[in-house]
Image (cartoon, rainbow, N blue to C red; front, side, top):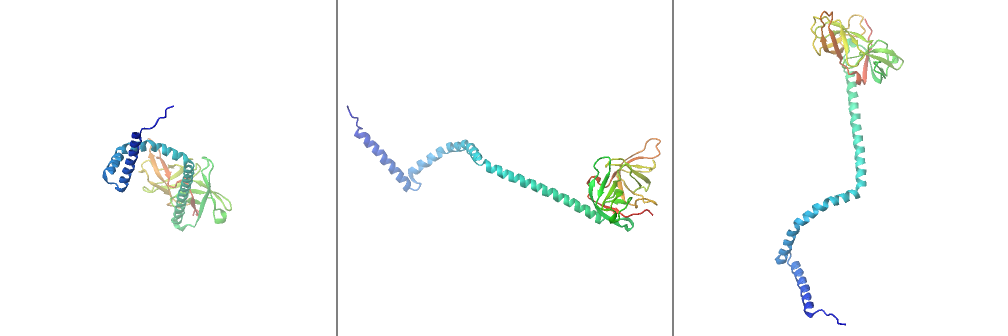
Amino acid sequence: MAVYRRPARSRFTLLLLVLTSVTLLTLDYRGSGSGAISLVKDGARDGFAPIQRFSDRLMRPVGNLVGGILHYGDLERENEQLRRENAEFRGDVLRADDAERERQALLDQLDLATPQDIPRVDARVVATSPTNFAFTVEIDKGTSSGLATGMPVVTGTGLVGRVAETSQTRAVVQLLTDKKFSVGVRLATSGDFGVANGQGTLKSLSLDLIDPASPVDKDEVVVTSGLQQSQFPPGIPVGKVEQATTRPGGLQQDITIVPVVDLRRLSFVTVLQWSPG
């Protein structure tokens, strides 16, 4: 059988190529980035740069996806921690807002100017009426603090209502918007006297007995009249005129007023220890 032998010329050529490669690498290394070899290398790098950038853009989403899968658990834990911290922060803000509102309400009570230096008892609202048909709130002071039925209840803004029921440590306050509530009032601008009556809604009262010829302006302030034997001292703001109309042949104007006190957000009130003279 004939044995194939590599021709001597082929072996010589292979050896020459190897030696040439080693020489080029040595020259490139010793040349410290200069010379023809460096130029060839730089040219090759520049030539392949667009291909490399394209490859990087192509593979980056894949790498991000793989990284996201590998770190999904850590991200979930971090997100959950952030959600808890955010919820706690919102709760702190709400509690701070509520505390500031109550603080301001209490300051209003302390700055309350009561006519004729009437003794007063400050109280906190502890319960509201459970239905829309009972316009009352409960406060944390009672007969042991000097409260009695019929006493006016106010805030720093104006009239709230009157004490309707009492126990030793609690009292029920009838709000001025209750249908059974009435108070003698006076228009602050004209001085005309009338009667404000609750209508069974927290939003408004009716004002009766105002002469059709009397000028009544929108947003005009209505205060307690304080006439003799009145259950309320004079000058306490009750509401503002919302609208006033006169029907043909009517004996009085149809006037609606809105309370100056926000009865839906009562925190602190003041009971005036007032007795009609």
